[in-house]
Image (tube, rainbow, N blue to C red):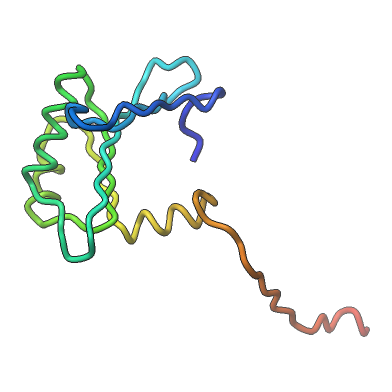
Length: 127
């Protein structure tokens, strides 16, 4: 998607005891601006709520950061979405549906199995 600067720099922080941040991506070539990432793999029907988003916002403050992306394979509750929109930090929430769309659009973690061409008659060719 163009993040990571010219060197495509990103690093994984996450794991047990990660402090609420799973990764960091440089937004520009020099690494002056960083985007912090939190990811949750939840089953369908198990939504990410306000407490998880609030914890991520707290983790951002702990890193003196004000930009973050919270990704889930499931979805976010209304309270979580409202909270993310109300805080001073810029928090982008990406649910499973949007994640899937982004993966396909940018060719991340997917493989093209088959492509189809649709053709129409070029009437100018026959004149």
